[in-house]
Every structure is written in structure tokens, then in C-alpha cells.
Image 1: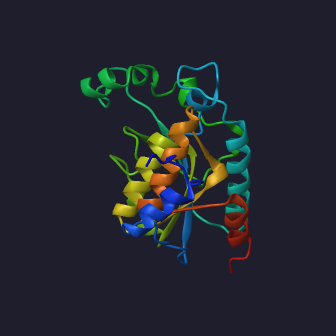
Image 2: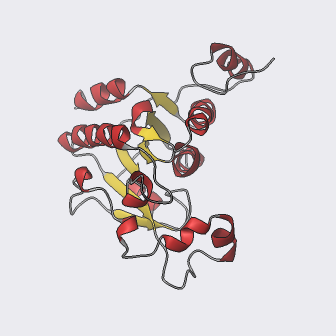
Length: 217
């Protein structure tokens, strides 16, 4: 039988559930928001990496507003390399040639201004897809007593998925608001959401995430 690799395929979900996947992690007591790569390179359709992320941006801004009302930790990421590309390395630049353009200080790696990043919200330049690889993100979250990460941003099949896997591997509860992530490929987006929900965290409606945040005490 052929399945559509999507959250919206009930037969596929039953297959995964029968195989022992798709459990629920739920919310912990201390969430934080990880905003993945909502910078010009990914959200400007004129860029090599760019795609239409305007609806995603709106959803991310909504999550940030609810998180700020509760005083939750928020960490932003972007991907950036030194001019000599030493922090990228030859394998990364060969496999992902776009990385040669992702230079520190360039406009490409700057966050979208609509996000309104505040001075007490760290911006981490990560060298790989996961927000946790080669960064101090985990230590920052541990220092704040965080047990749950709300992962938003782009791209679902790449940096978002990789960050969710790392969060799961570090025993953090992972929550992904479905409308607050996106990808340049609709099919890759659908497949990645299914994988995240089956293996690494809970993919949840945006309205449910916002409702939970707004009722926290």
C-alpha cells in the first residue's frame, strides 16, 4: 500500500501508532521558544534559499507575543560563517553550496525586523542545521530551567526537523505549532511534520499553542 507521508493521512498514522510511534510528550512547566532562521536568506523569495514565509512569519510573531506576555525565554538562531568559511568546512560547502553566501555580518543572515527581537533575547549563529550543534543553546536553556521547547521557523525539513531531533535527544519536550513552520517544498514540509510528530515532539495547532501560553500562571 502507498501512503501519503503527511499528518493528514489517517492510515499512515495508524501504521506508525501500531509500530509504537506517535506518543504524546505534552507540555512541561517551563517552556521556551526557539526561533529557527527567520532571517532574510530564508524568507526573501529573491534569495537563493528564499521561499514564501510570510504566513509563517505572522504565526511566529503571534507565538512571540504570547511568550513575551508570560516572560518566557526566547532564543533566535541564524546560520552564519566566517569569511574564510573555516567554520563551515569543505564538506558543508560542497554539499550545500549556498553556505558560501551565509557570511557573518551580511544582510542575508539578519533577522526579519517584524520579529522585534529584544536585547535580552539571544541571537545565536549556528554552524549546522540544529540549533544545538556547536552552540551554547542547551546550556542557556538548562540555566533557565527549561523543560519544553516551542520550535518555530524554517525550514521544516531541514533546520526545524534537526532542532526537534536534538531537543528530543536532550530529553526536552518539543512542541511545534503547525502554522509557525514552513518549507520551500510542500511535500518535504508535510513529510517532515509527520516525522517530527511521530518521533521527536508534538505537532500542534497554532491556536492550541497560543491558548496554552496565554493561560499559563
